[in-house]
Amino acid sequence: MLNDPAAIISAIRRGYTLPIRGTHGVVHWARVLENGLRIADANGADRMVVTLFALFHDARRVNENYDQGHGERGAELAKSLRGTLVQLDDAQFALLAEACRLHTDGLTIGRPTVQACWDADRLDLGRVGIKPVPQLLCTAAARSLVAWAHARAVSGHVPAAVLDAWGVGAGTT
Image (cartoon, rainbow, N blue to C red; front, side, top):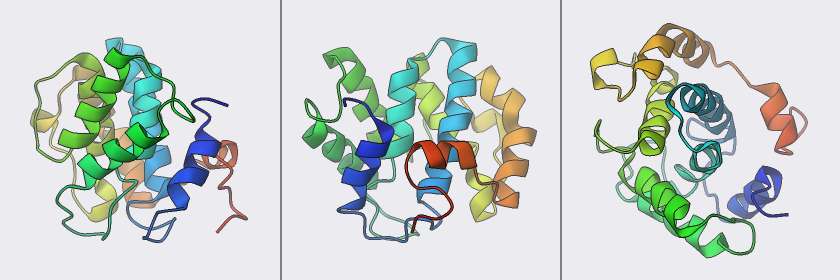
């Protein structure tokens, strides 16, 4: 099935070298998804692009620290799955690739979908001990979510329903 997150995660895992539940793994991706969908509902972003960003933005990291080029590698992975597991039109795919490629550059100006993706990831910085700075977020929607998202990130909140839907629930390693 196209754009099936469980199938996409299965494909990602075949080349994922970090712990699947590590700092940049599936629990982070699930919180990014939940953050991103809330922002998308407020700013009109493309929910499918936001969903795929959550899956691909860190999918090809090679370490948990500074990893230059990981966003580009994630975009390349999405491109390699386009037409089989990933179904987006050209405009949607361009947004996904841009969001993945530039998500660590600290930019705040962009199209609403790209902004939703960037903010969704930034809202989860609490998992590494960084509180998101509202002035460094792109959208008013994200700024209104800082306290909620930060509390979830620092507590290590596990979005169980998302992980279960993705086929990586509590019993999956």
